[in-house]
Image 1 (cartoon, helix red, strand yellow):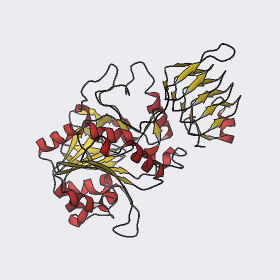
Image 2 (cartoon, rainbow, N blue to C red):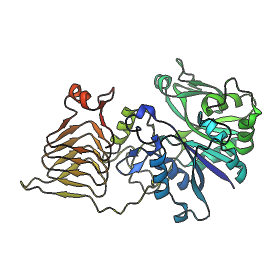
Image 3 (tube, helix red, strand yellow):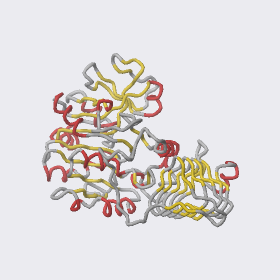
Length: 405
């Protein structure tokens, strides 16, 4: 086997609460049709990496059902596989203690296949990436480990990311988690290099590192905090500049290195809002690098007149299958599947997930409404945040979130 993929999908996603109250973060819906995990899985499949283990842990039922229904390998992978691996406590009595520990507890899967390379990726981000291009650079540099990295402005790196220090060849010299004074890229003083949390390992190096071949100052938990820093002194560890990565046919307006970490409600909201433009910076309609997901047997969306002759409309919005908008206006929003929006309502700059019913004469703005909710007629959401806080969850950025059900 050339490359084995391991996707770490066990995170709690505590900062995405209440969207993660009943589901793992990778299972959170996105873009009116998808789940967050669909994006990393699509990157692997589109890159021709077709043997993949998905490591799950917290509140995984929704995620497991999605993987079973939407990612059955027999339908398009032939002899390859996409297999979910729940936490099994094979090495002790503890659940996964971090990203590295989750892989350590499943080393037997790597040893079983004995691939040349192991691609260890997270499941929390929205992006398109040809992973084969990263692998080609990994081989060309003679690296033992390659870390996917995204240059960001120095002032942003301090608060958002783990920052890599590199030399002129982008060999990694050091790693700091959210440093107060990030080290800039050589010859690019305005930018620092942020780790994307995605790694390519030579298999022997990964096995040796996780099997006790390195003395760690702290108990082994995370790749970024523990494993990568420990490898710098005796292995060739390089950063891969994500700005180089290209998909076949980018569309007008697409941001070449679009990558969003959906770590907070605000980040999740803004990434969904990125989808609305005529020429969005992340375009779901680009079929040169398709995003796959569950295929449901829903009818098309429908826009109808109400009894007063008002036409249902959606402007600068995404509307999922099976949704009916009757005599209401949806503007700048992301609407999921099988939503019902009744007459005289106005929905603006909001995310409405599957099987929500909006009653008549509602006014909803800058809100996230999770699945299976019924919003009573005449409701106003997002207009008076003080009043909303008495009934709903309101983020620090003033986004109203109504949990599932």
